[in-house]
Length: 148
View 1: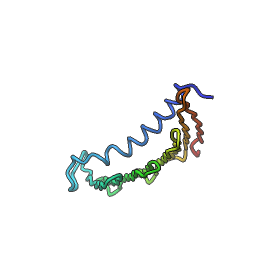
View 2: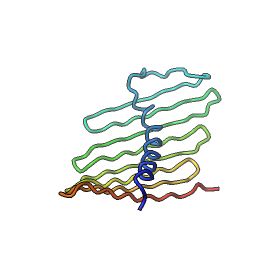
View 3: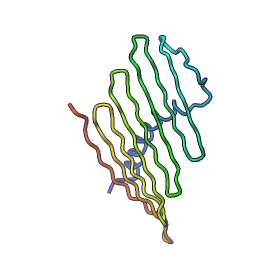
């Protein structure tokens, strides 16, 4: 069984990847029209919010015509929530993140998988439950190295 520090490290890694995809797309204070950015890149983003759901896309077009894209879908349901995110860089490599959380009678189960642009994957499953003796969390993680 892994220590709590290792568990937090694994969850922190998944959180950082999700934040890298999610945070720039969700910033709704930005103008809706394309904006010219650093080094002549053109940025465009769209955020759609409905009760319990958020979807966002962002595109950056570089002066040489290459594009980078990000997309996010986050949905709340009576049983839990799910998040899917994808980022494609200007070289065409894609990174993905997927997380599903389901409520149980005594807690929740969360499965999250992140795949990097070179094919490395990190999967984490968290089972949490509460009873009279306290809270129990079980963390299972699996890592697959990048392709050569």
